[in-house]
Length: 248
Image 1 (cartoon, rainbow, N blue to C red):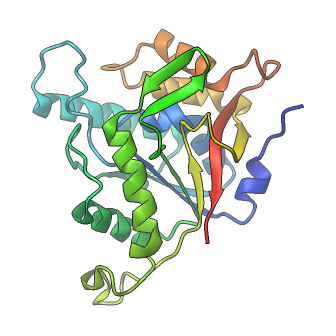
Image 2: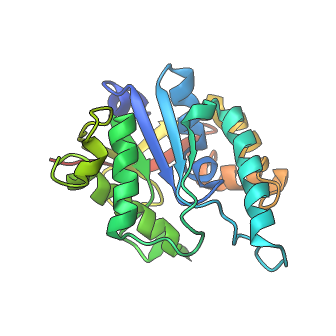
Image 3: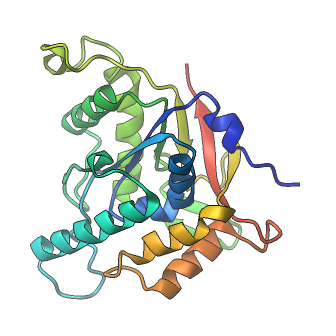
């Protein structure tokens, strides 16, 4: 029997910060969960570390133009999921060039201090090769690894301890913040697995994902949802899968 972990994971959670490397990653990894959180009255803020301006596959297109296209597609996707305009953030840190360095950690620590999330959703920082099962593996994009690293480091200790980036705290409008709950995507070969039932949100997920038309067709968005939420394995229901981590 499959158990929906939504209530246990989000029981005492009111504010959720989602930090993803590129436009469309939110829909791919947690679009149904984001939609369900918002439907449940939770405040969700989604940060994109980059604007995906190098995501042209084999087509020739000006990165400046592609950035405009991808941000516009992403805005449409966020609207479908229910994310408020003020909670849709683009950091524009360079597609394919993202570093988990002190500058980037400081930028994300500031966002954590501003929003003060109770839980953060982000990407797998540990595995260079993602092992989905014994026959399906893929390379974990470097931006995904560095996003995950940056978010974890920014949460502890940099957003918490006032001696780090003290200039952010000078006028009192921003204060330190500690977040100890995380959902990590793309973590199929790790312990602490939880499943979030997104059966009622699957159409929102697909529609939002398909809004990234420079990257996905509607059919590809449907196929992605079928693969990642696996209705056949779960008797027709749809679940998004995460590693749930509580830290001290």
